Amino acid sequence: MAKYLKAYYFLLFILLSCKEPYDPPVIANNANYLVVEGVINTGSDSTIVKLSRTVQISAQTTANPELHAAVTVISSANTLYPLTETGRGNYWDGWA
Image (tube, rainbow, N blue to C red; front, side, top):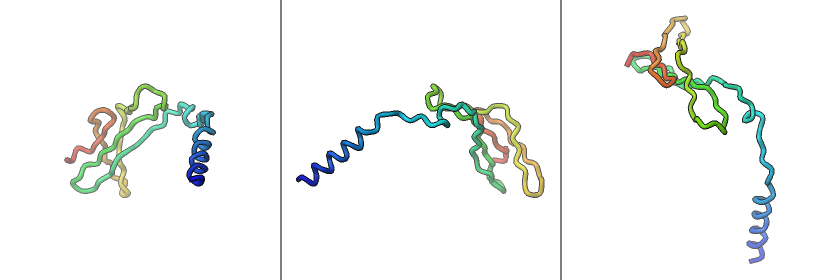
């Protein structure tokens, strides 16, 4: 029983000892980074890319889509494949 009591007190000590909040500089910085999510498919499958901007954790919004961007995929043979905007920061090649 004493072994469990020691473990309980140790766990309680660990949980209550960290009271000072830590705000890393990345969270405090409003860098507005461009986020690119997507899959480049060859053949008959569509290439879909989503563009958005980072937001601060404390912001009221969770999405910040990048609108009206010129998105082009360039192959290793230097062939250009322009993507069309479909709304809300989504771009696709239109092959589907």
